[in-house]
Length: 171
Image (cartoon, rainbow, N blue to C red; front, side, top):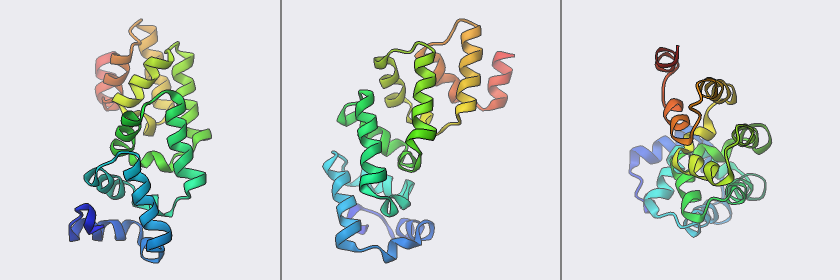
């Protein structure tokens, strides 16, 4: 981890959050995941950000968690650079359920008539959308649609607002 540029404090944080890292095989688990992230085009500093943002990535399965998430992002239409941005910006995406979390949010966008290229732009420009609750996303889209102002830009803007800010702006 120090080879990625993590200082002692950040290494300690990673271990504190995911102590199981100490029991993972360096050769069979840790290095392959680090290399896989680098092979996706991430620089050492970006890999370090993913690891500090989601240390439990080391405990996830390549075949059942990591690769399916990346493939799903690519299937949405994101290119390699956009996938890398999502992973670096929101490494928690690796812990989300495709079926119960990610796919339903994208389906909500499709139901609101966002085209595939618009969805790509929304996800790549605002990766935290993937971590927000579907209820919050749906209720805010409903308000925007009722005001005839549901666009990519307004959606991203309102998702950044706290509930109090949103209520003050749209009440």
